[in-house]
Length: 366
Image 1 (cartoon, rainbow, N blue to C red):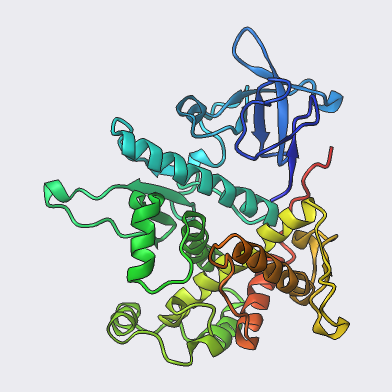
Image 2: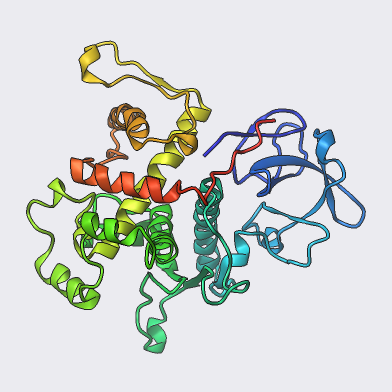
């Protein structure tokens, strides 16, 4: 993600901030510009941008979920829509009368908004099921109801509807699930990226000219998915999975291999954009030049044509990230190996995301 600043005083701010801590101006995220803007409130509770003469006539209001401290995104004041582009994707949210539900929902919203930012940056088609019930995207955030004898909510995707068990927003619950599933990485944002990968397989790969190449790289998607899941949970991943897949779960079925690879691609471009925004340069003095562990991250990954260029920046950055974490006594934030097969799959995802009819959005630099 890019860096953001208050357009009034130029103070650096986080993506989630709705007020500048330095000048105290209200802040909001304008998804049409992909930037945080400082706001001047009017008597009718609408807002106008501060510090950008070109946008002085534009008036906004906050998304309705701002009242719940769940969103800082803006909606044009003249729009009939109550919710912003990210919150309009919600179909069901948990009962907020329960404090633990509220906190978990807020955690989910932070991750979902970061996901939507990335989708907008990539220029991917993004419509809600309210706009298009057949091809739109929607989210159900649901809680288990063991006291009512109900079944456990399963996180997953079904024809554009992504269900997330809100227990995933609890650090302890998620860590227990990670250990039970023998996973090296499990985050709330990772869940969103994985599940939305299934949605975009339906939208961008299935029944398109990409499908045959997909089957060559990932396998035949027509194999029985239920049976594949059963085999995976009964027998586990093949012993040589690291030679061909990004994760153990990716071995389950070609759909899961795609979703895991898709999520990984989003991890890479979003993290590299952050590194680019900070002007990071990796230059380990003890490494020989032939080690290819140096990187000047002076390029925007969303506008790079070749995956090789992206990975040439990514590998040194992840080595540095892991080294910094180890210095703090923390686990590696990047416990993955990108083998040649995974590299080819990532390249496929990259090309699908950058096909001519899609166009990455260039954020405003002012």
